[in-house]
Length: 416
Image (cartoon, rainbow, N blue to C red; front, side, top):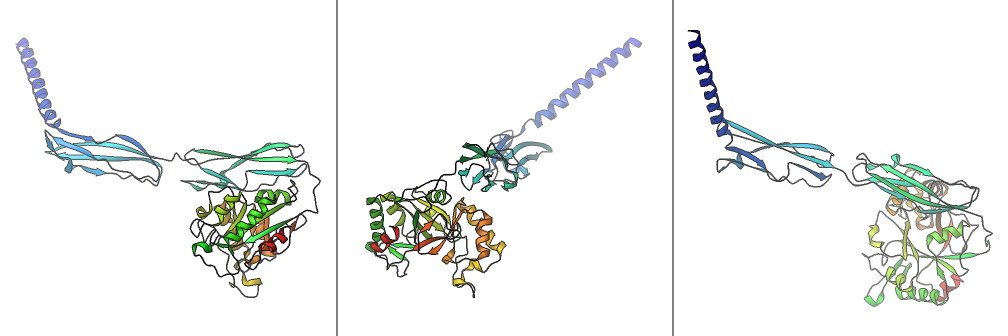
């Protein structure tokens, strides 16, 4: 009897196992007919701020396309670094399946460090004064406060040294930049030398039918005549850096030297408004400095030539008659110190230089001069109609304003 029970129990176990196997195969055989798969990668990376393009998925039951029944859950925020999951799910005939795609939004762009100047010289024994820098990141924005600086300057030893600027953004992208610092012996300078600084504004080409009726307009042919005369008579047209180094006594320049400046950025000075200045400079390989009102015109209109460099003429404070009771009513003289300083900094951020500034309408007061100094400019220009000399106030450097009534001989007499 016991043996029969054992046999009967074994048979029941076999029946249960066979039934379970049959049921499992039936159910999973049906389930396996419901399929879902991703189109494209199941894991991918995209750069922050790029567009995420959903590639989708496909689903089928036997040979029937069920892709339209797929539900997609999850979003990718391309403006924020992180990992996002997109879920694709389908339910059909009491069956369900899902699949996931992992999308990683990454920032692989290194920050950008801007220096007001790549090179600077100081005299032996003088302390190095930081000229200014900024750092910006495509994702984090302004990260200037995160910049770390190191230097190996020995102010008591003549030589060339380096100041290194390093910064890392929140995605661990790194950037570095170096400023060269020369420690030099203080030279015996020619204190008697003077340099004419010419100040132009607008240029027009009458051969093209262009007309300019303001007194500060210069016919381009007259300007070219001056450049030819300078070239024929072996005059050096200075860069602003060369003029600065001369003013501070870091270097000597030829006796026959002149600095050409152009204010504003209006007619004939850029690619968008006549484009006569730059071709003339390039034809005679003559250097000039444009003092640009950065808030009025896009700086890219004036870039691309080694013969025209750009310095600041405020960002948006070039307004005559803006206020009463001050010289020419220049807007810069009417605002408070902090507003003026903020405007100057905005201009610096666009130009990426603190070498030189020029006062709108030649108008200045103690407050505006102090703001120019405090923001870090090394030079500033006004009017005055006389030559500049090294003993001049570095923030009130005189220039000769050129008007259309000046003949070529008049301008030559200013230079000689």
